[in-house]
Length: 286
Ligand SMILES: Nc1nc2c(ncn2[C@@H]2O[C@H](COP(=O)(O)OP(=O)(O)O)[C@@H](O)[C@H]2O)c(=O)[nH]1
Ligand SMILES: [Mg+2]
Image (tube, rainbow, N blue to C red):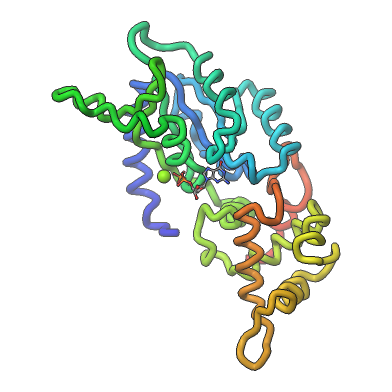
């Protein structure tokens, strides 16, 4: 991650979003269903102002279904319309479109207009492409109508702004940074890969012990270093001289988590006032 990126680009993006907000009826705020709060924009509400926001929990295929349902209720209880989707398979799209269509149009004329915002890697581009479909391309073939270049036609009554608002997450909180790194939203070399794997193993042994068992044949409460050694041994990850390559084990478990190979896993649950991540925040791991 390039920290330098933050101030200048953030100001520019916020300006772009504010300008375009005038033109839209509804904003889709994309979050990662596996960690909806850590991937949420810190100041979406103030940025979006009076426009309607729909929270879209994307990558639902990778998240724990039961936990995702808890999140949907969590947002609903706070008066925020929310829907979970799997953008790659278009799961949840019907519900998404029905939520969009329930938002009041600001102008009587024309289509309902919508823009997508979110932190990097939550699936903004994928969602745009999937919503718009191949047919839409850009509605730019009318000479002189430059404004139309900005819009992707989704249907006869829905248009999507072709530029998503990319904003940076807030990661003053150590646990938030760790979760974002696990999800691949910030480069992991910010954190030591091995430390990240240690935390993931600890997390899994508490919340998803059966997955550790079934994927890696690891028992609960195995010390993380030993877990990495076991993975290295069983997969044949060796350095010269027969030394176990635990760095490769660390990379493997993180990658497999991101790809959903360990199973559908949620890193965050609603209303978690105490527990794993708070302990992690209070430890000096990173
Ligand atoms: N499994 C899964 N992967 C997704 C989903 N949506 C997006 N992705 C993947 O997430 C990564 C980031 O997506 P992208 O659209 O580039 O995110 P952006 O940075 O927000 O524009 C890509 O590898 C996508 O294929 C989803 O619903 N499920
Ligand atoms: Mg993108």
